[in-house]
Image (cartoon, rainbow over all chains, first blue to last red; front, side, top):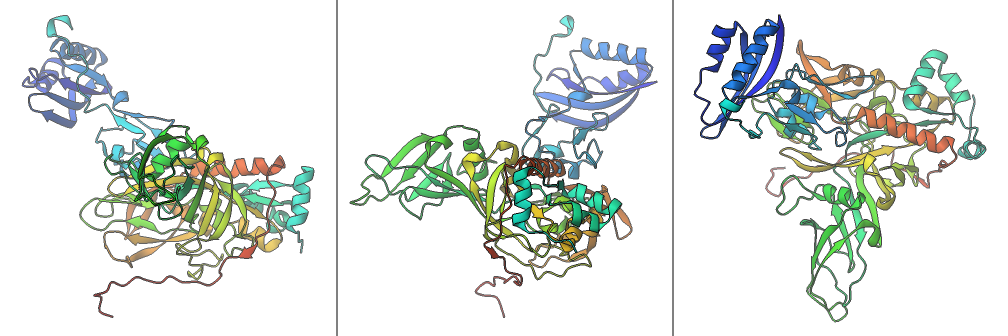
Length: 148
Length: 387
């Protein structure tokens, strides 16, 4: 068994598809929805944990692409600009899932993407605005289903 | 008892023989070898802190235009600066906010200047016979203006209360984001590295004391505002909450963005992360005991920011050993803790100051005058308040 955290981005014409149903029924995956965000007429973003056999996950991801859904791995949920970060720790105050931690003796800000649920609280808690989220970004290039 | 003078220590610094430790190293040495060994073998202990210091700002002198102007309203990148002084002098405060641009304030302007960027100066005036001009607009850079020096009314707070929120809504404060129903505790200190916690009675720190400020050498100008050395102390002589403060001065042109960062606290406003480090001469065993302080010896008071009153309720005292562990117990419940002051940068500052002294680039200074040893805070009552 393998677990993978991904963000799905739906284009305006794709967000009425029963994606999670197909992931469960056709690929036998355990699906945990961590965050969902839909802007009517524009796009939908869904943060999922997918658990299953590695081959099934791979097949499910290629099915999603064929449906015109853009899949992003969870590592890219938030990006910390290390040049701006001063390792103060203010972001760790709001990080419920403890993806962001700052601890003795190094007191370096550490980020664990597997724990991040892309809630976005850290973005505004950071006093030097060093954290950016990719979760709500617009879809860069939505490939038509037949080219994906 | 071994005693030394600052002059003797400076002589050793000049000869390259001074023994300099950072405050965390001094604490470790005292634990292993005892306070006497620290008093005998160590000459100087360096400290450091890198936290948000709102009460900061810079005096700027822009130089005279032709025809000249007596500036009465000054904006720098649309952030108002105080110009009620001589013709082309102004004071730009760190927390002053831009008229239009969100999340941008005086500290951001100062950081841009420090990074060599051009800043738009806009000034207006009523025009006089000696200063006929009524307005000017120009792009200025730090290198091109006459003077730019930080003059901060209150820095380097000796201890500071920790913050929690009992209310049912998220509070966005200068102590960071405080989640509802005791969701988190925030604290702001460098603890055992903190300058004024290593000399709690200010024996060696007074007016004129030379120090590390923003990556350059600066000085203590005066006691800071809200200087409150009469705060109750624990058995180590450490005040349990905000106590002494310093007013600091230093040349902005010599500072570095590594130790000078604009901050914006969501829902509160702009502030300035500033690096401060003070060398403590280990003159005798009493000072050796002071610099041996550990995070477990320093307590602070936990305040409930959910109650919007001057005297916020105290919910107990905690040591920085507990606060820095990542969680504390309050009413039998574990609460996550987070710092707002960079421990990592604080150590970098203490190490850099140590390096300056070891290389003979930084001699210690005798204070010109001591800071007040007794002082308490006055409150402000509004006109309609019932006495």
